Length: 104
Image (cartoon, rainbow, N blue to C red):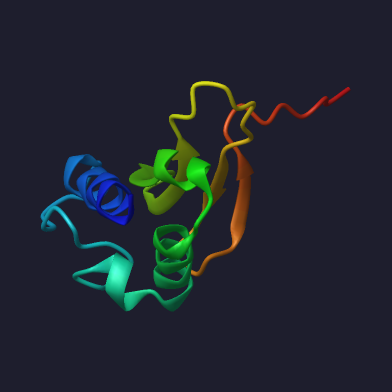
């Protein structure tokens, strides 16, 4: 099960969007965000080490929002109702995907 989670997490980084002129994995001023960003490494390690059956569905995507790198923590759980958080390079929450704000 750990192998499946690892493959999903690593694959998400290889397939995710990359910035202009950067390598596929480079983000946030580092070459390997999974290893070099402590907060992200802690999340990946915790997910990989989890004995929860659902942990096999979890993955991280890297993308660009407002010209900044963001990390989207999602899953492909077929029976979960999920809120998808988005974080910046420092691990600060930027909100959630489809987070609607009622502005009057």
